[in-house]
Length: 327
Image 1 (cartoon, rainbow, N blue to C red):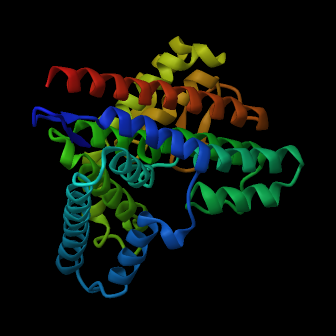
Image 2: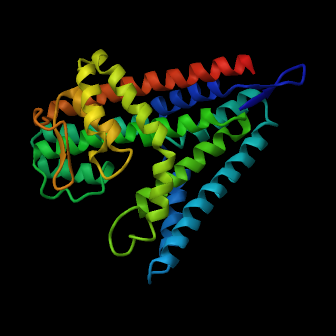
Image 3: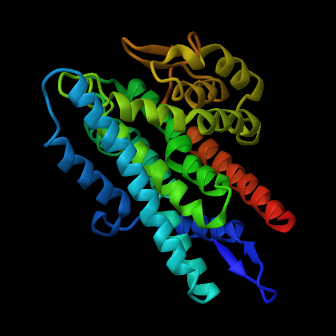
């Protein structure tokens, strides 16, 4: 958000918007899907998916490329138009509205609540309920045969991965945009790419080629945020009773064991920080030989995610604040 001062000079106030958006998320959480831009993105992607070509490789690939790239550009342009309109409103009104729109691109409170719901079900001994909550809120894999330890592992993995792409990455792009009026556009472009990957980036018969471009574009968009998130987990591990040195070692040794070039970074750092082995059967093992995750480890992961998110957002705000004074 840019504010015009008395001398006519535009001053970058994105650091204020970031703080306000974080406060809104913590106090308010997410609105229903009816009012959520990301839900609208999902509806649009689902509509386009039903109309995608299904034969061959080339046509589905280019359809997916146009869907992801075109959707990200359109999302950015729409957000840029809103930012431009808000620049004409009184500063307090503009700041609040832009913060609300920025808050819609991330959800820390929702992530922590989802982890807590699975943890609570396991504490009550309700494994089937824990599986259902895990599948509903956190993962897309088949969870029907997971035991309690595997449910805990999947929950911890999702908390770590979503700290990056569900919380810090959109804020990273909002703050990274070279001009204030493009901050919201960058956050919404990222959120569309991430949503397209979440819905289409699978290796089944229908989406093998349709989802390839969305998956690769999302990989590129998350290269820096995923590694920065892993570093935050390492740095904050000791604060929450974890082991920072082990987090660093497991991160550097195991981050590339996942099929995704990005997901393994925060997950491996989390495995090392907590001292637990995170396994997706048939796919990867992070922190091999460490203890099997227990229900209480979900709570430890939630605390670490909360602290790392707070520190990460604080760093982003500080950098933006310094740059606003130097611009």
